[in-house]
Image (cartoon, rainbow, N blue to C red; front, side):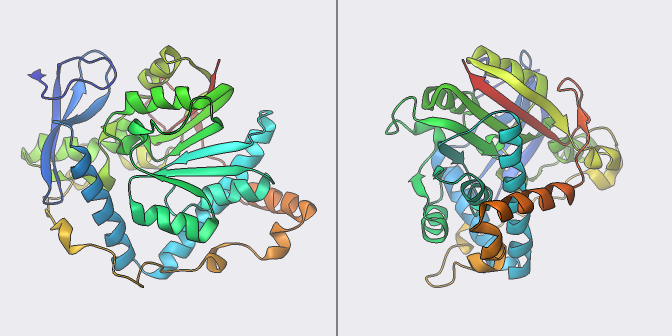
Length: 341
């Protein structure tokens, strides 16, 4: 048990169990601490806003500079297909949003699919990286806000029918405040959808590095938080967001040993501490692929009948993930659909 420098975001406890150490580029270092009360795992001390934004910009630029265009095409197509399936999922739940906010939308193709499958849908995107916002407006025409979701004071209350955070909540400084802000921004009856990694599997490489070698590893993917699924659902309920469909899904990483195997191969590598200032955007070199490389032919998008066929095609062509109780630590992802009541 150690005393924390930064209280737990969820329960404000100032004590916890140290389970590892990380290096964040050449910007900062921190412990990973599990709260003694609510079981959530976070960095301690938590990084500042300037540190997080600097790391996010460096990570985005690093991807754009180092990964080939075919990787972006494949990844963005995957997100578009997921968005098409999610539109069908919403319809199956009787959810028909008109105004949606996506937090940390990446390249924007998940929301682009929603806007395609739900004609007239208004999409607003929020990201801490100004370059991401520029690309979202240029490529998709989305309304964008640059900044942290913890600080969206300029957006009025009761603004959205649906708020989406896919692979997002693990990146924020204060996840409890983000959830509280989502409750404020949702209309009564609106929905919050969160998809975030199972923290016990996500943190395993950090824990093993510390357990086996008493050493740090690099912070993977700018993950500042590692969630216990049941505790996350309980906090959502306490925040006025009633569970509609909450579960864990996907067992591939668990089968490979994440969360339970002490094989040294699962431990994170020694930290590289890459200089973050070496990765930045150069004018005219910020677009590895075009929108046309990713989207299906317009014949699939411009006609209601063909959009239904497209949805059927993507649904039948996708092997469904195994689903598990939110109380188990088997699934790779925590999936939560909650409603503001």
